[in-house]
Image: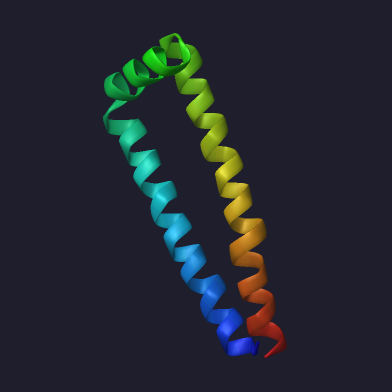
Length: 80
């Protein structure tokens, strides 16, 4: 496995994960009633609890994208 292949892998993984993050964040911002209703049906969360859970999810997901996609991609760019 060469560095170009790894670089491409981490780049596209970062792009896909970032797109999922942005779609989730935007849907949470603009479709709060729908998201809260869905969380209430599936997990029996109240509105405030559902919004906090989604915010925690987004915060953790952002850290995971940075740690496992962005950082390795930058490291490969540096050592190349």
